[in-house]
Image 1: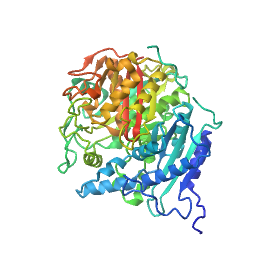
Image 2: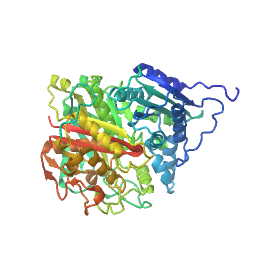
Image 3: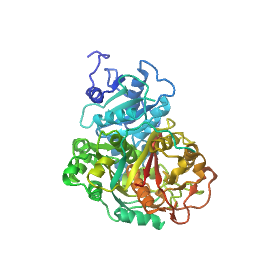
Image 4: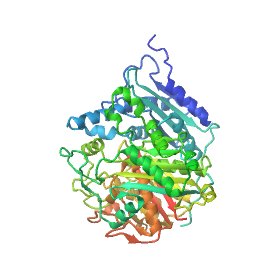
Length: 186
Length: 385
């Protein structure tokens, strides 16, 4: 494989399929690993030991930068996070420290819920819509469609991160979804 | 002030027809209501696990080590009982469950982890309480997980995407979260939660399990189920400010309050009670007070406010459902829970707090607020039927 050959992303395909099921239009997307160049995820200041939050930020940033048309001022973007198992690395590190009677890093406190990296993204990209974390792609896209229908958001960034469990690598994907006719819902 | 204009929502009327709860005050909604109305905080030294290495050793926990799956399953079933749902009606009703995750996953071998995900846990709770497997989903958005699930259920029912949803949430004080909150230095080292008060020193964790049956008014009428309350309005927003601090002026929370009032079609002065997020932390309480001043205007100085976290503690992912139940029960009884732990006024948190003891007052409409890391905010408005 050449270093820049594209790598198919089953979880991106899953997000796209779920989006199609709700009738939402996908305006941008990204995945990890996208090519062979995606070997080591860029660290995210303030987040330690686990790839969960850095991967989430990486694919979300790629999808947001990849928008064909910049988000107009005043339009609202929601963040919906999806993960099969959540940040199991952070959970295991905390449990190991507790069981060994070791001090737990305060940074693990902040990253122990998926909201923290969503808050980072929201501040970085001025995403003022709701922040939601649900367990599956179908639920995530259902939430996205509901938020758009009810004008709680004009577009929704749906991000999925699945950390490697037994071998294999970490996988992440993000899509930006909007109402299919692109009309302003407000 | 005239009522706010109608906000975008489905046309259906949404009602709550059943509720169940478990807290440090004991099992059941009666124990929860009498506990919060007693004004006596449920905090005590933690016996459930070793806290000798922690800065703080206090929480609002039941005796023993209850099991999360057992308790959320029991609560979901008890809420269905309270609503008078038959087994076939339950079997058509999805479960939205708000939890941090399966407590077993952090110590499971890698090979067992895929079976310990939130979907498996939610499926087990749905199956154990006789609810539908399809449509079940798990919310894990920290302290707004349950309130977001409730808002989503209401929005779906108002749009006639569903007739009925059971929303349950559960958090039972555990050694891992306790260690994290202790490490984050957010636990109150004086053993009391003092929301909006001078001298407040932080939050304390508390056991909380709650479940509500949310359905369309038509569905409730068709089976002659009397509503406990209407779920009149809901709002959810993000601050876009910081990973773990609220916007200092509460801009996001203010927008959530405004959206909930608009969906309820009421004016700020129509609110008879607000059960605030009121975590008792230095930054969050002034942000919330500011949000209420922005969203409610002059009514921010008159609507009675308390944070029942000062009594039952912070139930994390379950907070939204536990506190909605407290709000609903208090409004139905016409008795507003006290804002416990008060030491004196903090000028940055000026509100009409319920102080001293529970206050008898009518509350035809009441609001429950929650906020979380990530700048996530929710507001839920109930109206008496």
